Figure 1 (cartoon, protein in one colour):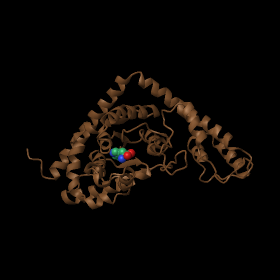
Figure 2: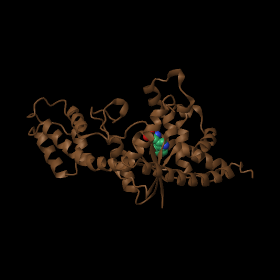
Figure 3: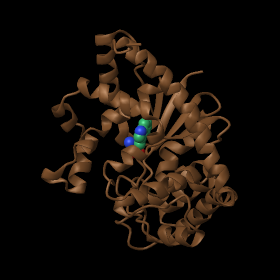
Figure 4: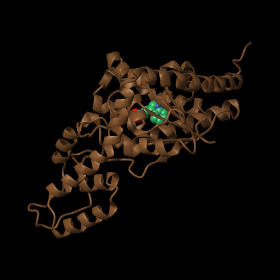
Length: 330
Ligand code: TRP
């Protein structure tokens, strides 16, 4: 079975963008692949090191999000990054294989540095987190990494490092490939290209039906349309993007689009239909979350078992890595 590795930083609740960009794939792929999902607390600390409580709390929240959308711990290994020290060790070896200027060119990291306004006080750990992410992927011999578009530079970086490692020390590690979902850049409710907690344009998987309603009512539609009788645009209309992603009744969606183009249906109606669709989608997720919330000991147990299994796999790789690097002394 081919191996998949993917994961998230535990910095806050996961949202619809995470679901459609990655979680949905994970649920589908867990039957066909040997799937590992990393809760990347070490990576989360690279820009939250002054806020360890936040990261700690969100490790469990992230696990709850995973379990409630249907990631099945019998099929998928869910684990905590910091408890697999082999990742940290491989990161140190990898750091020799990448230049500072290459790291500075990573477009995702560049954008984050700008967004966070680090300026001269950029922590070295933040700049090099793509190297640590390369170690996350390589240590598990992952063939495929299902991610959103913003993570492509990380996979590219991983391939470069792995290639260099294999060239220098002999073929030891696997060059991974990305797996993009159909909606790898899902817009926020404000129509901005990305749903993102920092932009405040999200609907979380754990949001109540009242919050969903409020957020959908705030959604952007077609700015060129003044009256409901004006012909409307579908392209770039967030409400329809969400319908396409979350409304299982494709016929209803097509009919609404036709009416919308002719000016025969109003924004409130298409929004009400979306609220219904989203609540239908979120209801079973919410119910499952409640079940697990009643038994947090079980959730911790799942994390503990997953982490033990992840460590065994990582230790096996590190054995080969040390041998290849001629540091397997005894
Ligand atoms: N960087 C990813 C994010 O911000 C999280 C992550 C950490 C990850 N390690 C990973 C994703 C390995 C895929 C593979 O969402």
